Image (tube, rainbow, N blue to C red; front, side):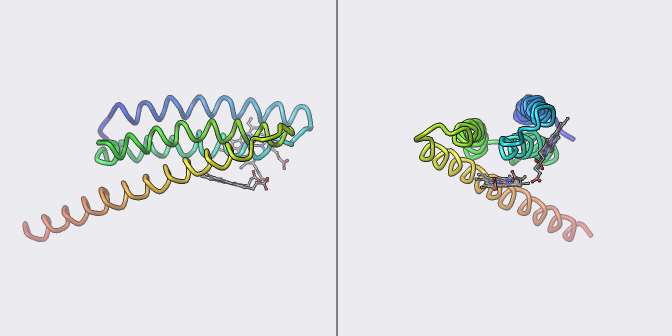
Length: 139
Ligand code: HEM
Ligand code: HEM
């Protein structure tokens, strides 16, 4: 595996979400108040799990971590996720007027997901097609 800066940044972000999500899970379990379950679940899944996967896939295929589109994917996900989950927590706790912010931030995360899919499909699958074409020519 090739190491790269973008993957290291994803791993650092992932463990921060992991610690925060597990701490919230412990508070939920301890208090018996599970009202923030959706926040806990998405801190774990959009934070810890997705970010670890972005980091690992980026190590296996560094091409998806490079260039302007990869930077957009990184920043959209890293800005959208905390804003979305902060707004969701506020909405669950009854703070008025956060719905538009929740909607916009969720859309940013959705856009980041679409960009990631685009990076993988265009850069990993093309790479494999090229590699197998080279193999065919060599044999
Ligand atoms: C010490 C660690 C953890 C504690 C104490 C904890 C605690 C909890 C609690 C109390 C709930 C609410 C259950 C309910 O109301 O039905 C919950 C739900 C959930 N947790 Fe955790 N959690 C922990 C770690 C994790 C991790 C590491 C992940 C994912 C990688 C995770 C993913 C989820 C998900 C997806 C749900 C929602 C489940 C559903 O839809 O029924 N949790 N957790
Ligand atoms: C922009 C991104 C996302 C949005 C807007 C979103 C939205 C939602 C909504 C509205 C629910 C229902 C919550 C409820 O009934 O209280 C939900 C549940 C759930 N989502 Fe997501 N989701 C997103 C991304 C993801 C991702 C990436 C994963 C997994 C990798 C995931 C896993 C889950 C799970 C396991 C549940 C059931 C647990 C729960 O009720 O909190 N979601 N999501």
